[in-house]
Length: 250
Ligand SMILES: Nc1ncnc2c1ncn2[C@@H]1O[C@H](COP(=O)(O)OP(=O)(O)OP(=O)(O)O)[C@@H](O)[C@H]1O
Image (cartoon, rainbow, N blue to C red):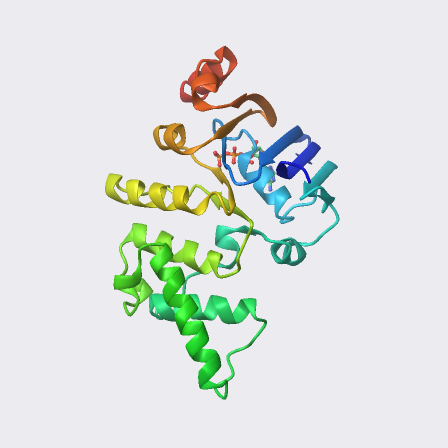
């Protein structure tokens, strides 16, 4: 069994002549927190879209647990245990936090919302939903409507609904975007707590947090990987420095 739960080889995707992802080899170690960073337009979002099959690659292969999933569709990929946070996490603002997680659990079981479902089933879902809320620090907010949750808590609720699918690999697309410092710290701690039994791959612009959180950082620029390794290494890389300086002066 390979140490790498997720791998890509020679992954490419162009849009009308723009090479958004241009031959990316990625190797994500099982149980790690792996960040993809890079200046605007580097191809990070396109890479995520390729991994979850929101987009078809022009070339290259994607392997999950060593198995070729390049031809799989988005639903199949989710059922194989690789789930992107927003994919299923459209939070229903009028439902409570608990109800939101329960809905996610029912979806996982393939149930629709039958009002005749047995009390035993509902109790089971309630118990699991409370466990998931506890895992993301939302127990206290269980009966609060999602609309009333502060921003950081809403992101935590999204993560709880994602965890309801029991993913092995969680893809988080800018999980800290738009947050104040207090929320950033809470959600960063939450992300840290998810890894180990799960693998977390994230795209994030907050380099300060990435420096503390990520085991491995892949730096992209113009569709290519320009550096990879722990923060201490990639932050010293001259190409990385010039890519960031270049973009901020663009
Ligand atoms: N659907 C599309 N059609 C045409 N061009 C696209 C499309 N999606 C992305 N691109 C182009 O591909 C390149 C990579 O974009 P992508 O959004 O993947 O970068 P990114 O690293 O996620 O940037 P950001 O940090 O700004 O979100 C850019 O030049 C972008 O304009």
